[in-house]
Length: 88
Image (cartoon, rainbow, N blue to C red; front, top):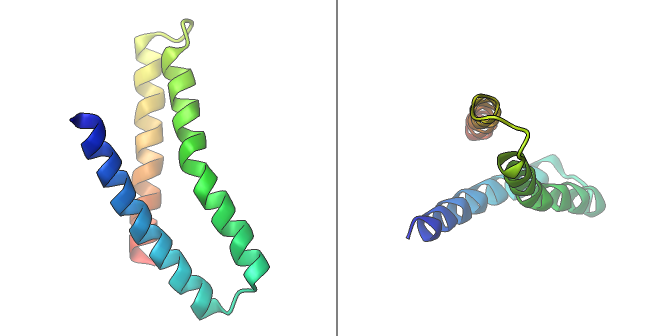
């Protein structure tokens, strides 16, 4: 159940961010090629971040304290990006 809720929350937030990004592209009169490049990078960042998080979490040489610190830093960055995106 938790995975389903997480999937729904990520999907909803990605829809909003994608919509805002599309509106920004239109307002800035960005070329189609540049818009496609930025969108492609945007699409691959979530899976890439997930893979990096799983690798760090599963790494046997990382202790709980380091794992907690990395998790806190990643959450802080994510929240900062979300606030920045929301206020643009």
